[in-house]
Image (cartoon, rainbow, N blue to C red; front, side, top):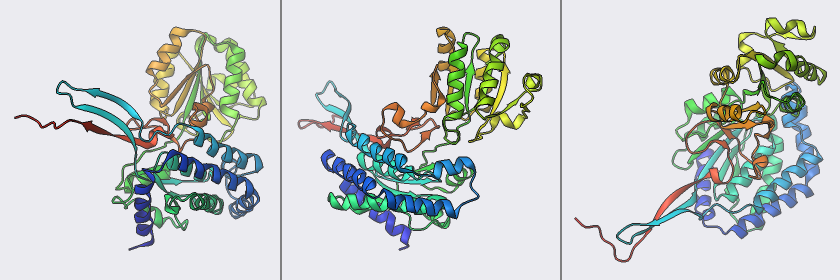
Length: 414
């Protein structure tokens, strides 16, 4: 048996214990893990400094995702406590009914089982994934990217200590012991012991996982997100939303990458929107007809409409109204998160109904594409597919269901 097979077997065994663990015991482990993270913040920061020093060639966006400081560690600890305070989905009744012969049916939530999470440079995913899996009754196998490996190890060790101190199997949360890429391939073949793979990273990672996995994949794809500013948009609101959607944190999957502006308000809104972005330090790429608005503008190319920049760059396009905006998003977008700014409720309803993305927003920033902002406490990722889960993957999305039938000596006739 290989080391990865032993990890898979241990996870399966732990999942059998965890699926019947009490809510109180799971919450106790999460609160203990939060305490340990706070008490050992210096150790985590030392590990994080090691990762940062070992990868000086990372982009600014990658460095932002990788870097931890005291407030970010506190936010991670707070997230654990927030999840602990949420209702436990395991065992809850989704629906129930009785049929004519008196047989009583219930559909109840149960854990998925064992979840493999493969991710890149965000060390908070280690804690978020472990927390959500534990609370939803799932064992997890975590494989962080090489650039965040030391930080992930430091966090995982503390979570394992919390499990031990609260009498839960330490194998409930396991970290793949090496950043060796070959171990990803081995993990993807553990179909007897792993029930779901969740990849969180760039296109190359997602493509590899989909191509090689013998296990069902719950994919988190790229966030080529849009804000459409409609002819009936309030200009001040539009500027406020667009700046936040692009510039609050440019390296997260909820950041806006393309701004679409209705031709009917271009004369009054476009220059102000572009100036606000430029003054905030954003590179703005526009069509040829808009270049004259400011000498700092750059010419957009066809590839810009389908690019997830994850940095301070945005593409800007004038469109012929809401229908053309919807068509553009359908053609170039990634079905992640898209927003409309408008005071016209009918136009907003049209956009919200027809844009086929996991998250659509009206008069709000795309940076709300975050499970914590949805009241989920945390998330493993934003699922952009259409099966099982879509949007933020939190506690409920990490469960499935089973049917329970209760009778009184019932036997089927015929």
